[in-house]
Amino acid sequence: MKKLALLSATMLLITTSCLKEGTNYVKYTGNINIDTLLVQDTARLGDTVDISVRGGAPNGCWSNLELMLTKENDSLVFLTGIGLFESRDGICADIYQNIDSVFSYKPADTGKIVFIGWSPGDRIVKDSLYVLP
Image (cartoon, rainbow, N blue to C red; front, top):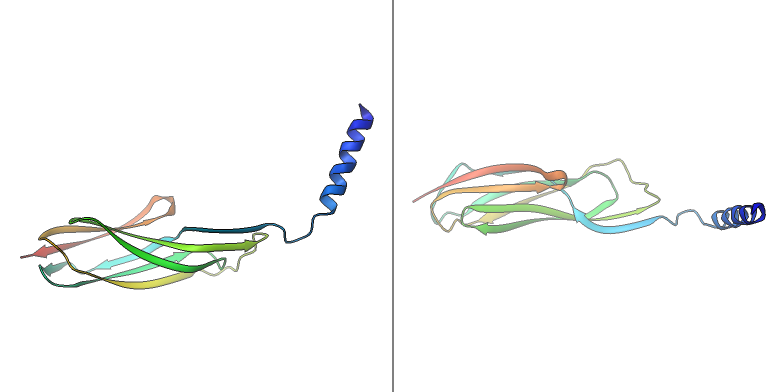
């Protein structure tokens, strides 16, 4: 039994000593934060409204950030963001990556439209637009 334990410990030592540095590579596409969302208070039916959005990611391992606007229905619009996370050994520059965008939106009906910016961790920012006839 002692020989088996000694052999297992030796194999573990040999296996871990042969690993090269820099083998912990991670790459995936994930959601980024929506930090700010600005919409004017009112508009008339037929107007085109600018929606200003700022999104961001927590460190320099994030790149290719994109913001998206998705109309759920005539009274609800979602804003989300994605980015590419790529890291070797978990080393990331301590810099907040951000992206700004302005979307043009044309309301289809009168009433209140709620714009919701969703971030990971269920952090939500909201703004509203009242569309008048």
